[in-house]
Image 1 (cartoon, rainbow, N blue to C red):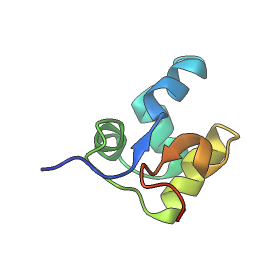
Image 2: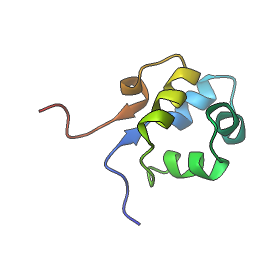
Image 3: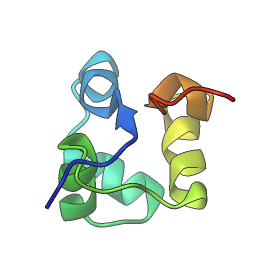
Image 4: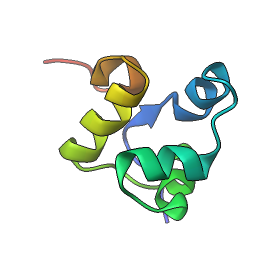
Length: 73
């Protein structure tokens, strides 16, 4: 399966937040640990709702967590 076009900082952010586990993040945003694993490997693009939930866990904006390499055009 090809990598997603959107990159993210989830793994780094988890470790910066008291070494939060993948399961802890999954529980807080309402998804499975497997979804977090795929997101961190950039093999899955989250729904807009999930992206907002993840950003809110870290008190950041979506743009601080996820990057779209195409930029704004």
